[in-house]
Image (cartoon, rainbow, N blue to C red; front, top):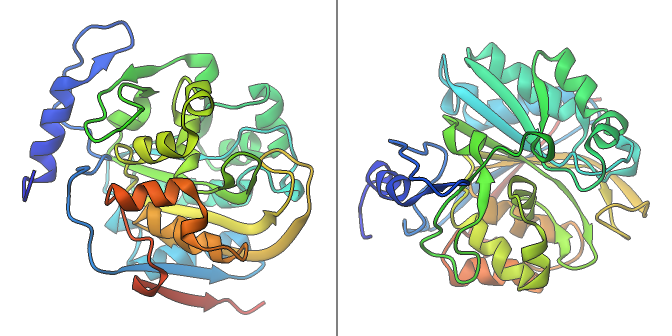
Length: 310
């Protein structure tokens, strides 16, 4: 692709995309998806904010990133994808903390977003997951709604030009149509992938998760991440499940940290260090490195730490 612009790439992709019914999907742009063949920069910045006031962590993180206006303009459609897949309480650290999700909703609305939607394709019963996680209530109090993709079945089939295995997944249509896509995973252990963080969180935006587990999980995670490129990744490290993930209950360590970055691969690479691991320990990060999807070398990630006073 060379220096072909992002917009030109997205026009090409949109012409190749198909709806779930098989008809041609004509979209002028998928503004949240970056070119899969764009050159990876030499370095990237991550902002790690620490403290016990989780709402304050969100606002400080956006400040460090240059402000919400960098990502959300007046009238924009914003889609937020947390992990809200499990019928677990916030203290059990299986889902993104509701206070963090709700505060991102508030910040986006304050920036003048025309629409802010929060979506998930839960593994457990969606009504139970949304209620017990506390995310549904928190998001509604913030002025938005948590949508279950398992209920709406609003997916569109798209071509993944760089994928090695996952060639034509059904992806949440809301993400494809958004002006701004914010990925909000929680970092935790995982029985199959070892860790689940930003890249793996995209599985909750895909209709058929079983395909990932029945073929090559690591490569499928890298494949979907070659297509879904969030404008911003905000990873929850406030409470971290270190054993028996992804659902638990397992051992939970309180770190009180939230990580902000625009390179989802780098966010995951950094996340491995909090578990005493290295990026190459994860198969999907090795695959992402081979596909040039982002930075996995920790020496090339500028980590900027901010600790808020208690």
